[in-house]
Structure formats: structure tokens, C-alpha cells
Length: 69
Image 1: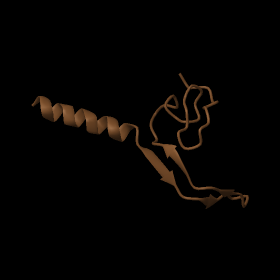
Image 2 (image 1 turned 180 degrees about the vertical axis):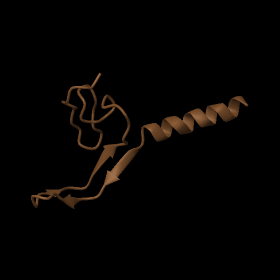
Image 3 (image 1 turned 45 degrees about the horizontal axis):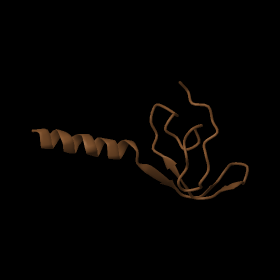
Image 4 (image 1 turned 135 degrees about the vertical axis):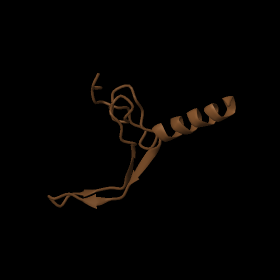
């Protein structure tokens, strides 16, 4: 039983922090947005790459946005 719970917990953590690939697209104003990765959607911004204190491993940039505590 312990092994099953451990596997479920590890699988859940893996899904919670998965990245999502976004294909390039055109905005309504004609601006092209390059393909990129983003963190998976959830109910908080504290784990997003753009949030202050976080680091984007794909661009090497630090986050600058204020978290929504």
C-alpha cells in the first residue's frame, strides 16, 4: 500500500509542474508570437516563470511579476 501511495504522490507532483509547449501564432493586431514553453495552468501565479523569485530555464531570465498572494 505504501508503494502505491508513493507512486501516486510522485505522479501527481510530476503532473503539477509539467510544462506546456505553445505553438507560434498571430495576434489580432497581426503581431506574431514565437513558439514557447509555459508552466501548466493552475490557480496560482507563484509557480509561473514570470513571477518574481522564479527562473525560466528556457530563456535564462528571472521573473519580474508580483505574486498574487
